[in-house]
Each structure stands twice: as structure tokens, then as C-alpha cells.
Amino acid sequence: MELDGTKVLERLIRRYPLGVRRIKEFLDSVEVYIRFQKLAEDNYGFYFFGDLGFFIILNKKRSKNYRKLTLAHEIAHIFYHKEQEEIVRKYSFGKEEDRKLEKIIDNEAQRLCHDYPDFIERLYRNAINVSKERLSYRLL
Image (cartoon, rainbow, N blue to C red; front, side, top):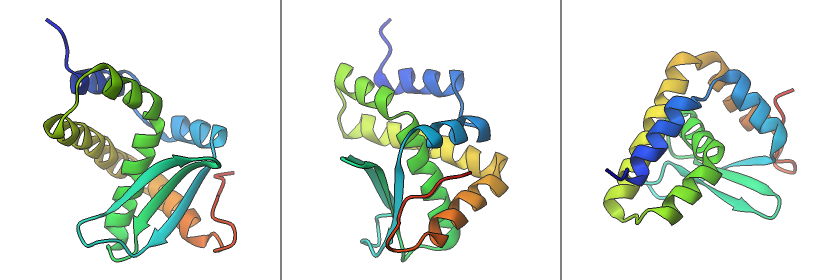
């Protein structure tokens, strides 16, 4: 029986779950830029890959807790970015599969916020303490 793409991603996350050490190592190896912007009410945030690295945009209109959860969600997307892109290319993805993929990433983000609340808080504080001129941050 052939697996669908969401099952492949679920297996990948079970095999390589995110933790503090893994996130720190990963964020040391890539450039991540974070911005707070006013977005549409139904948009919590998003990420994209640009010339300088990964960009995470968080909705200023949302509460701090939602922004922290969204930060964890987008970090999970970025961490699994290559695999996710490959899965989407390999398997046919429609709206239903996209919703399943988002739910899988949501679950991982919720786990991160639950298991490592101090670490997620520190990431969030680092993000908001960065000056407008310099949007990148390092964990060190």
C-alpha cells in the first residue's frame, strides 16, 4: 500500500522530532529573519524563503500566545522545509492534503510550546528585541 504525503511527513516528524538542541543547531546553520506585521484577521503568520534566507512574518494583531505558537509553527515548517517541498512534489497535494499537512505542523508546534515553553519564550523575546534595522537574530 502506497503512503500518502501526509503520512510520510508524520513518519519523518516521529523519527526526527524537534527539540531545543536540534532547533539551536538548525538555526545556527540558516538565516532566519522575523517581522511583526499587521495581517488579515484570519492570518496568524507565514514563512517564505528569500535570497537572504528564511523569513517569518507574525501577525501583530494576534495575542502574544498566538504569536509564540505561530513562531513555533513556522520554525517547524522551516526545519522540515526541504522534506516538505519534496513530499509536496512527489505526492499530489490538494486542499485536503494541505489542511492535513498544516495540522501535522500545528501538532508539532503545540508540542514544542508545551514541552519547551521557556525556550519558545526566549526565541520570541529574541525576535521582539531585535531592532527594526536588523531583523535577524542568533540564539547564542
